[in-house]
Every structure is written in C-alpha cells, then in structure tokens.
Length: 209
Image 1 (cartoon, rainbow, N blue to C red):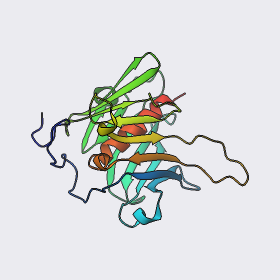
Image 2 (cartoon, rainbow, N blue to C red):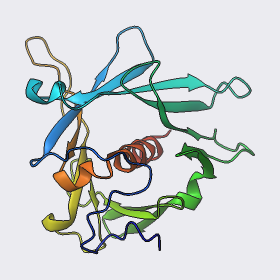
Image 3 (cartoon, rainbow, N blue to C red):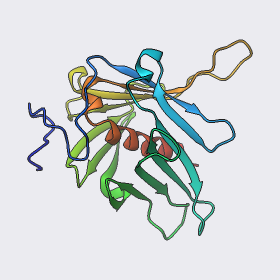
Image 4 (cartoon, rainbow, N blue to C red):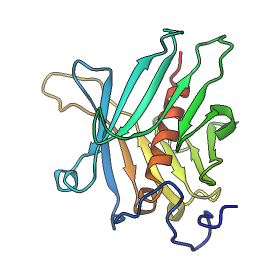
C-alpha cells in the first residue's frame, strides 16, 4: 500500500497525482453541459458561486483513426487545449484490441483497473488504479440509473464520495433543460479526477450498445 494514501485510514495526505488545493467544506453539484457543434461537453459547477473557484473539465470524443467505429474519450482541465487528465477507449465489439485507460502517464487495460461484479438487483464496480493505489467502490443500488461512489466497502453516507446522476426527463417546450450531474462531497474533491474518469468509463460501459 502506498504510504501516502490508504482509504479507511485517518491520514489527510493528498493522494499521488493531486496538487494541494483547498477542499470545499460542502458538497458541490457539477453538470455535464454539451458544447453545441462539438463532440464534447464541459463539466462545471451548477451554481455560479463556485464557477470562479472550481475550474471546468473539457470532455471530448474522437474516433480511432485505425478503427473509426471505436471512440476515444479525452478529459482535459480548463478547456479544449488544457492539460490532459486522461483518456479511455472502449474497444469495438468483437475487436482484438483491448479497451484501455490512460491516466497519470500510464496506460492499462480497463479490466485491470475497473472490475465489475453483479449481485441480485445491484451492479458494483471497483476502481483500483495501480499507480495511485486508490480504491473506489461504485454501485447502482440507489436506483433511477444513479450510481454512487464510496471510499470503503462499507457503503454508508459517511463514506460517500460522489453520485453520478443521469438526466431523468425528456426535453419539452417550456421545460428547463436538465443536465447529467456529478454530486461531489468534500471528501470526493480530494480524489476528484479518479472519481470523474471512473464514472465516465462506467457510464460508457453500461450504456454501450
């Protein structure tokens, strides 16, 4: 176990790969807002009060030039030309290529860092990134297509890091546009990018045709 981080311990040390920043004292809701005319969206705080202090993430999708039916999702800080956080590619069905994730300078087959297990009426995913030694526990037990992320197998509110909440209603005239949300607790902000990239991979896998 990496000496700087062990979920379940009382150590406040920032995990590897994260700059020391001020952790919010309250939960913040972020929205995935599509960019018109682009195969991209921006993750930003829903409340204006946070938009000046929490930088956005730019998330885009490109085709693999060698396999156009396969798509690569890229995550960057701030904007289209910002620092690359990571990327992942879900291989086309029946492809000989592995689905991969690139994060913190290392590329791995997705099935080495994200393990799916199913129980009666519940799906669970465990994110184990080998370089950071973080372990995140996701499941869909909340219902409504929402998935929740915890820092421990003990899935209690005290261990909750984040919720990924897909939009729940169709667009209608006069109805405010609803965006998919990422609700992040103060503890979740300490491992924000692990939560973000694992949530995006899980959503891609569970909605993949």
